[in-house]
Image (cartoon, rainbow, N blue to C red; front, side):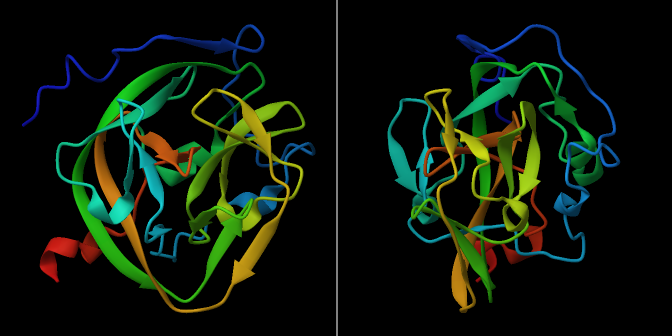
Length: 209
């Protein structure tokens, strides 16, 4: 077991946009589109080969090259249980007052799978439909699955800036995809966007191939 005491929570002050925070069920909120609920029947929550994963030292590794105990940069979000991987919890959580601070998380295992469909966001991030990204929409901050991201939404990057989604492409083609099991804060940066570490790909361990 790796000692996380010197890693998780070793943070620097993040950007404060407003004050206070909100945690509540927003599925019925008119300001929130309820169609962003994740399809729990899906198992393909992964990224395509060569997705750049941000390490704690600000270097990048392709996702397929990650190793056990690699330390990734992550983000502790105020008001969120940052260790929680429960999909229902994540999709019912939101805040109107975003605060965060930099943190780290540890790679425990690499998984490989295949998919018949994926999305390309802003011509760079390639991921399967169910993977969660951190989104700003109408001054509300929450987790959305990739399939429900819309042009105009904003995604958080590692410089703590929100970047507008300018284009989305849906690709219906078989491809190998990868995901990682992490320990600590359950998010990290893929192609410089904050994504969640929840995964249903555990049966696809690359080590079993």
